[in-house]
Image (cartoon, rainbow, N blue to C red):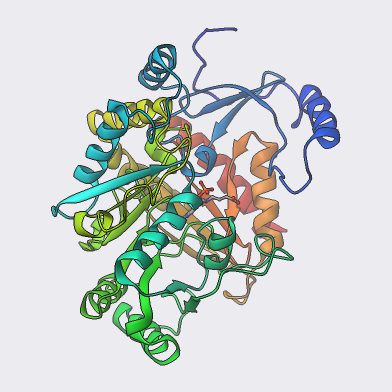
Length: 444
Ligand code: PLZ
């Protein structure tokens, strides 16, 4: 393999996708199930920092981080070294059979870094969906209650229970039912689409009224919420919404579970999105950026809640895999030593300044926190979702070698999730391309 450092520069040498990517795409369609699709069928060979190099030798700017995963950048040497060293010592024992230090160290780090200074415990799993499933298991076990309250626009995964927790039908749930019972959905605070001027407290009261009337507080095991919604459209609730929901939970013996799988680990400019409003969840789910690309997820919570579950009630063959734990410890060390939360705040300010300067009713809302920013594209009325336009903007970025993603309940949100180590200049170039794509769309 070519080990030359990769220049942190965009460089296109073929059209996209190039001939080698197209050949792989032909092999893929004869081998890979169509249910698993790719947004941008450019096959990647190497990555470094915020650059991905494809099989045709094109260098692309990555503003998606594999959906908020490679916050420490592609190919971070400390992470490569930690994983290589671990896998050479041993690849697997199963923590439930013979344990190892890495798992314990990751649990210690999670207990230290997650919001609140109370005593905590953690359990490790493989994927975000698996962490969410386990948070629900734990909440039901300790409360003896069954109902789980989730929100409009929520995304929590694709397994059977998490499909039920996820709001949007297509593509996630369509024809995949029946779904798990005892899931109740209430309105989210969505400032751009709520009645103008609705405060966080009012939006919380609206949700709470529904919980009390339709479910009954005494039946609810947990309220599960993404403090900033990810797949649902980077929806940032109005100030005061999360604290009001958390307080209602506290007063009613309901566990407040924060799904920080997409928002966690410095993405929003703090370790966790709950930190911005001083909200302390009883349970928190994490994954993605925690291990910089190795599959690892966790549930962290108050010791008395986590330790309520009987021995062997939680687990799995690979949960807290040694190499994934090594990757997590290396990623967390990078986040701490390079102040990636501070880097995320700077990235957010740059994006805000650049996109905020475009004036058009069709850019309905520019929102997000830190390096989790999005624009909601609407029609000239300033409100009706325009998914086709968002798709064209994302497509134009791809053609120009900039990986951006769309999201949103209405498919009309363009989101940015750059690696937190991206250089200012490279981010600027990526934003030039995005702004060009937006301007082209506005002119059409
Ligand atoms: N909770 C908040 O963002 C994963 C999913 C992409 P897994 N988001 C990306 C897709 O289309 O499958 C996610 C999330 C939040 C849970 C999950 C689920 O995490 O690791 O994908 O299972």
